[in-house]
Image (cartoon, rainbow, N blue to C red; front, side, top):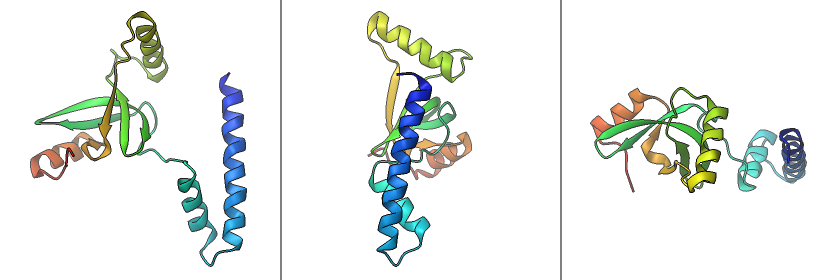
Length: 134
């Protein structure tokens, strides 16, 4: 499936959800934005904490490491280590080749509560012990 086809299918599905949310709103006393947001989340639409390809900072025991953000699902962050100075597309291509060669994806899954958008936030959580590995 090419990228344009996948984007069109995602757009079509999102439009279906928004139309269904509008029907729910007409039966509700809540505002449309609130009903729409609730409906989209209930139907699996997620809003990641940052853009795909951005750096995130992960607190691992007594250390902080930067990873490339890929996705968020069920309270977890899916990330990969940075590969040289590759951008997102080059990093994905690298992982595809590695997976084909030796089934080593190089991906990591972390609980969301130990991942931070900035190094400063991660350092503050590490110093204050405000993160929870569980």
